[in-house]
Length: 177
Ligand SMILES: [Mg+2]
Image (spheres, protein in one colour):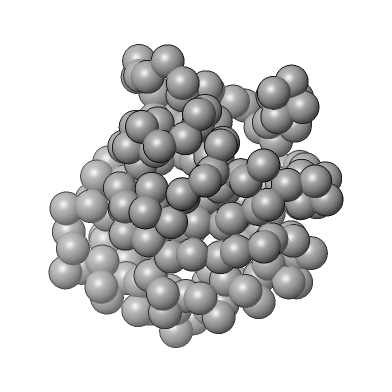
């Protein structure tokens, strides 16, 4: 089967590791949900933020989330793995460098705008995501969405969105069918 997987905060520990840098850039201390909201609203500022992030190669330095590599390697042996990220295409090279450095295997890597991942997720039976709004759109296109539990995605939601606490949960859920 085909499995879609998000990258930031699912494979890479991006939010936690870059939040200090983000707050410094914004000159404000944000809680995680506030930071996510600011990233969506302050579009112009975000162009500057992502440009600096790209220039400094920060996304090549973040750490993997525990169990991500091990579980994806297992899944990759049996299933088609499509990594679908809302990172801008300018990050494609840095993303590939990171994935290769950390031995994360995949068959496809796509970039899509927020809430548009479904366009690249055709045929994905499962999708692993942390963004609730994205998950709610994907829930119309995939059988099940496994949503990594985070402070920014905690509210009641669709029946086929299953909250998970880590990669161990995902391995069990995929194997259970
Ligand atoms: Mg994410």
